[in-house]
Amino acid sequence: MAMSIKTNEIPVGVIGLGLMGCSITTCLLIAGHPVVAIAPISIDMTTAESRIRKHFVKAKEEGMVSEDPEFYFKNLIITEDYGALKPCKIAIECTLESEEIKKVVYGKIEAVIAEDALMTSNTSAIPISILQKMTKHPARFFGLHWAEPSHTTRFLEIICGDESDIAGGEYLYEISNYWNKEATLVRKDIRGFIGNRLMYAMYREAFYLVENGYATIEDVDRVCRNNTGYWMTLVGVFGWMDLTGVPAYHNVMKDLNPTLCNDTHVPKLIDDIVKAGGKGVANGHGFYKYTPEESKMWEETFADFNYEIRNLAMKYPFDIVKRKLAKLKEEKEAKDS
Ligand SMILES: NC(=O)c1ccc[n+]([C@@H]2O[C@H](COP(=O)([O-])OP(=O)(O)OC[C@H]3O[C@@H](n4cnc5c(N)ncnc54)[C@H](O)[C@@H]3O)[C@@H](O)[C@H]2O)c1
Image 1 (cartoon, rainbow, N blue to C red):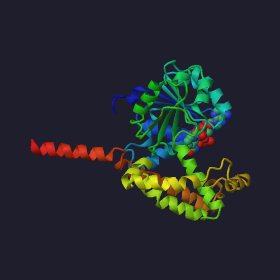
Image 2 (spheres, protein in one colour; image 1 turned 90 degrees about the vertical axis):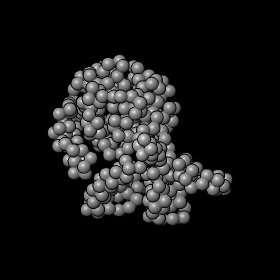
Image 3 (cartoon, rainbow, N blue to C red; image 1 turned 30 degrees about the vertical axis):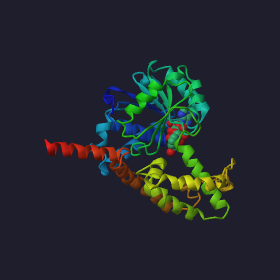
Image 4 (spheres, rainbow, N blue to C red; image 1 turned 180 degrees about the vertical axis):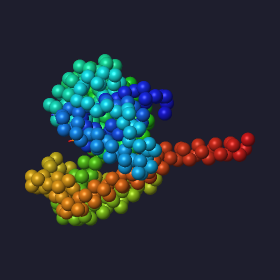
């Protein structure tokens, strides 16, 4: 970490307290920030506190935090009053994925926060260059794309729009170390950013293989779990090719790339499920079928898994080999002196 940052002196506003707003709030409180959590709709006032509390209870059970929820709640204000955002140095908008809603929310945030405060959106897919045009000071606007549950995942994309001032992006990159993230700074706006572009390329190929009878849904999932799933927490795609020998990939690409799916339509398989009201585990109807008991158990299993994979990811950070070598050097120097 190049900069020294005192998180307790940097109040952060989280606007929108649904699934992600609550886990982002949890992450920021763990990092020591005072947090002003804005409930844009009144239902948030009745659901947000218990959601955040539940995150802290589980985090303590898992040994991720040492204090009781009350300790962290001392730093939290949950309110419907946008005026409470006034001292915030960073605002994180986390409302529904709708340009209309986000535009109204930005007007309310900008009416209150200081001109030098940074504004960000957790949008999944709306280009930042479009969102920042809805604000008075586009240079201070960035995408801040988290992964659920934000207090355990290490993923964070910081995205510059066409008009963003890169210095703000670099500051967010530095501060994200205090949020326990291994962040990516996306210097040029592109639809889907990095993570979704990579994932959707894989989703598209997965549909192609199933729809054309090469493998079943279950078999495709088995490949993902046991091929990419085995090494991706240690290395990314480029690190993987280095580890296993670059020329082999070069060789395969020549013949394989022209055969990969490049369809531009939404696959029929997913279209049929969505048109029939299928949501996935949430209502038991997705690519697989789930009884209510199975759905509940999948959600619990996912919550447990998130902690285990986090521990593994923390044990093998991006610069694991550099760290190991530095430690060896230190030990050798101590021995020689
Ligand atoms: N769910 C994910 O895994 C995920 C991942 C990355 C990014 N995102 C993005 O984060 C944002 C929030 O997603 P979520 O999953 O937390 O959604 P959610 O449905 O759980 O919460 C939406 C929240 O939006 C706010 N909201 C609803 N109607 C509103 C209105 N009319 N005016 C102002 N605010 C309103 C409320 O605070 C509500 O709780 C979206 O932009 C989404 O694309 C979600």
